[in-house]
Length: 599
Ligand SMILES: Nc1ncnc2c1ncn2[C@@H]1O[C@H](COP(=O)(O)OP(=O)(O)OP(=O)(O)O)[C@@H](O)[C@H]1O
Image (cartoon, rainbow, N blue to C red; front, side, top):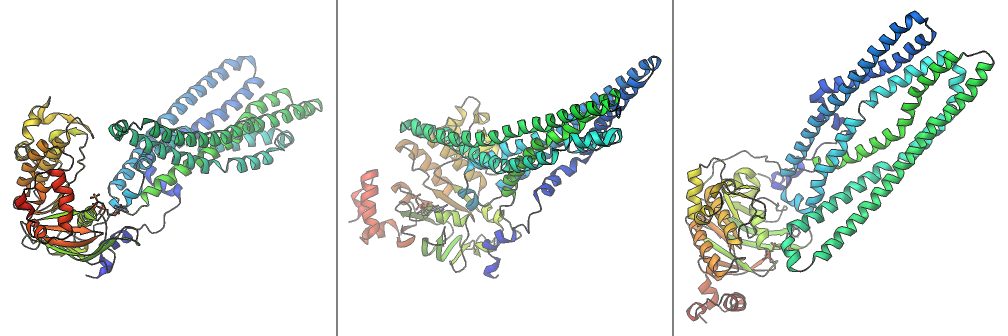
């Protein structure tokens, strides 16, 4: 397989050809609900017909004899009822299709977010992504509920009313609307920045969401460091920007409103003045003026709505663009199918691996090592030397660039693996256990969706978790949140139970006991030893108790392997590992015996 077929190309293959205009992309989500869209359109046209028809009926009523008055009034009543029903149906149908279409769009964006490469998500502000899913979709939904029908209603009433008015007196309508083109041109120019302002506002709301997440997610850290003021200050600054942007937007919107009134009142003043003059000359009757006044409102209403609608369209375009920007991000694509897995092959091989996040600074430099079956390698090194990066590469979260060496998992280069199959061979237990909102059983079951309750209880027992789970108010059915009320050690044991349930041949442990006290560490360590049994294990640790059990210790510095041997040999060889050992483990753990020190 050529390098061009590598993981790197998985992204480029998923590049969308060239996005269609936003309008067509939005329409694709509405199309499945064509019936309700059609009902909205038909009822909008019905409402337009009723409103115009009522004008004609009123005119007839003015001119008709008294014996026909009752009949005309009855007819107007029926028309009014049809108008009420149409307007109810417009609201119902537009709410219905927009709710469904927006649900689909939200699902599409959420699904897309789930399938983005970790490398892409790590670069984004999660609060901003959440804001797109919530705020921007709401902007779209409001538009469809409140303004979509007007796109059909307004032109029909406008054209019909204008035709009737032209037939009644072309002179009067012509003079009344003389200033209209100027008004429309001014409106178009003034409403232009609304889309930009709205997009900037949504961006600021996204940043505000991100800070709020920090405030809530990191509440204990914030309080422990007495940094409530700092975070609040940050929040206030973002909110100041939100305020500034919304004022900018609202100022522009507010400008649209008097312009609408001006657009409405100027023609009316012209009409009354010129109408009076034409009556005086005998060219018009007062009956003509009544129908004129009624119909004229249907000419002016759409015109006055132009600024509002144009502002809305600008806002919707901005919101839709932010949503489609997410949908245009390249997703992770599995171009390979599942292949037979050779469980006898070496679980992990690194051959001259060099890696950089930004394409400039190498985080890993020519790394080579092999992990055999049922072997444990401990990765040791100062903070930032690239240990976790190694795990991210193994899980296929990041890709090696061409010429960056080769990583093989179970004998097969990473770029030949189907990502789902690759990840099914690896269990990852990180230092920061993420618990999902749900029950304890669901959190353990996350490791294997087909597991039975017996399986879950079995692994919980193996992970030393069963006893504390049974002490919870509802045992395995106790609901825990993202941060939950469990201790660090309890969370770790749930993570270990998850890994046991997954039963993958390769285990990656990232500082599994780093955050625990000696007592919890002993309990978790016991569980870890069980999960390590019969597996190939790569463990990042600063704890001697873990390192001591490893078949081999790799000491890394600046993305390079400096030393690689058993713990005893490394101590004897008197190299840099020994220095770290004394500095870190002997002083920190106080558990190293003189024998182990070997010096
Ligand atoms: N997503 C990322 N984008 C850019 N640089 C990153 C990213 N993740 C890590 N780095 C950088 O890569 C280097 C290695 O980071 P890594 O997390 O692998 O170190 P580590 O040895 O695991 O550190 P620690 O022991 O503190 O967890 C660091 O300089 C870090 O700043």
